[in-house]
Length: 384
Image (cartoon, rainbow, N blue to C red; front, side, top):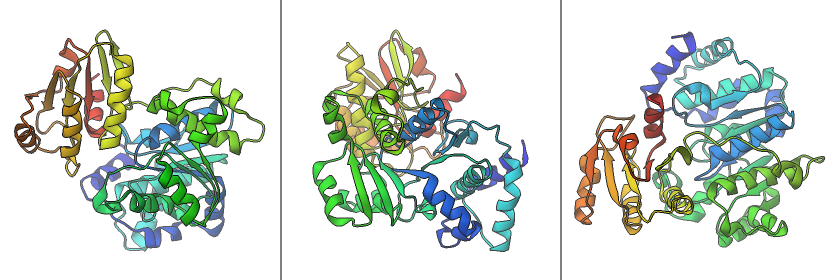
């Protein structure tokens, strides 16, 4: 285990700290200027990582140098920072440790990786920093950048204890990832929220939304999958940002799918893993799966992280009438909600289930989905 891995291991066992009020002092004024002008910030409830990787891979295909920072990872922390250069992480760690010591701070896991990603971008003469926010926007660590270019993927209910119980409140939290947005690229969100953006947020100079963009291309957004929407959103952003590239240029580029997000593990029978962990994400997952699966039934293998609103998700799942529900046994992944708590609600709504080891997912002979947490997907991927 190298120096950085040991350092991060210590952080992973502690709750993340919020040091936004001092993190800006880690950077010089020129650093912050470069980051502000060259960052594409990605915010939203669902689709952030997929959209970020789509942008990064499109830029890569066009020979435009970029670094992408995403969260969380599935297996290895290095998944969170991707660039064309061979990154030597440890050489950037010392400055983070010095900053922590000089300011008497205890930086959180996410904060450390974000600062490392920023340093790597600044020191490698790259063109774009594609930066996925954490949970929110307004109080998110990545808001220190105050990017002029922001992609808003979606708005739905998640982390309501932090972001609010109304979609308008969640929107406000996400939108204020930056106080000075030159270009905002909006994913498939409700029309009333789009109107809210145009009416109430004067810090945005120009807003582009994916529904109007695809209408101009004679593409019916209601007939495409959520994964395709993420790809189109990335294309729309770069169509505007890159003067010498058009929609036709960008749509012809084949980009790899983001691991752990609607990832097909097997075709016969169809097996898909997806880190969907909120109501909108699970709804999109089941809809997309229905377009691929000719069978009327699907077996679901489920595990939730603690703190998630599993009740609404379980109600949604029951309404889709799955062939079977299989709860992944306790202590399978990080911060897993107990089977007892999930099972008690399934008993209440008279939904049958069984408790199984994660290995049963691959042994299953029917079309099936493993879902509920990216940590669960990470544990699964460690063994395949």
